[in-house]
Length: 60
Image (cartoon, rainbow, N blue to C red; front, top):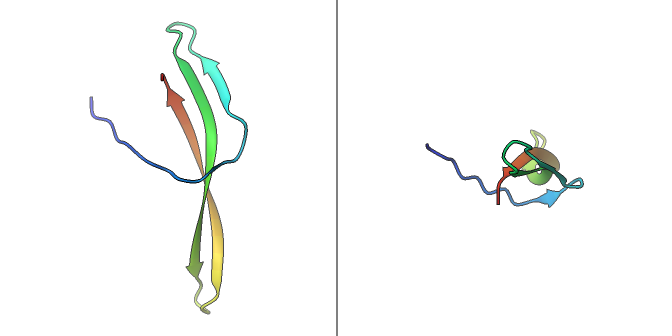
């Protein structure tokens, strides 16, 4: 099986939601990470925008 690895550096924006898969006992955590980016618009003004990444972690 091929896996991709992604590293997101940002801020957790809400409480972690921890659940367990009943059939296997595997823990699952749902959370959101916010990242900011700065950019210039067509007028040359610097703007900042936030992006929100919904994440799910399985296992350990």
